Image (cartoon, rainbow, N blue to C red; front, side, top):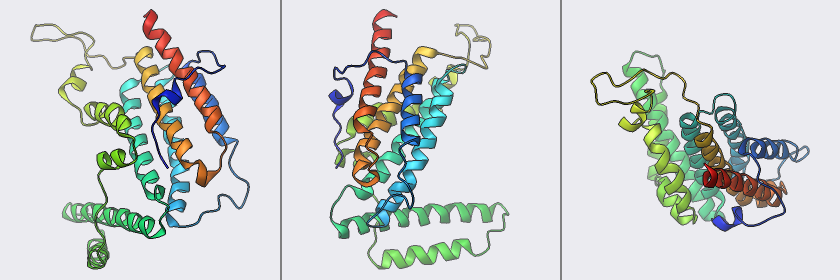
Length: 264
């Protein structure tokens, strides 16, 4: 169901180079204007229902990335963190529907539910230890976990392995790995908070705002490519009919940042 074809997004089409912000605005407007009429998307199972829910979540995530990466902030780092989250949601939601086998779909959905219960139990246990009244949440969640494990449900694949199986490893390498530096706050991310670096003990003035339009444009284009892949892969379920037009818009944004890089 999912296959990454990078050339799909850099092919020659009858579109000029398009600033990434303009491309994002156009894509978001297309998606908002193409929602199916009531009663909405017709789904065949719970996995497809989850994909429909993710469709809205990913739309909101891209909207936030657009707001951060655009004028006047041009905030590349925070946009990069959200782009990593965008990819995570894309991988996990597409994995649930990537098989046409109903039994396999059910297995994947139950694995995702188990992982959710495990994570929620960890939160509840830590909150109780911190003095928060969580009622019987830890025990209730543990009963769910025990019942599912007794029924043979196993935890899901990690996101790297999902990306490999979905033929989306390039996304993982270029989005997830690169975004980890900022998400987990490495020393490089910390040093980027200074206006300048010197060899002296005082390494420079603190920079509260560091707009960088070129870098922000690159991050936004990356997010658009991820979103384009999500739209392409979920079209059989959502039936939005936008894949070709979105591909052209993303290609225009790619050409824009490519041209900027060659002239910068």
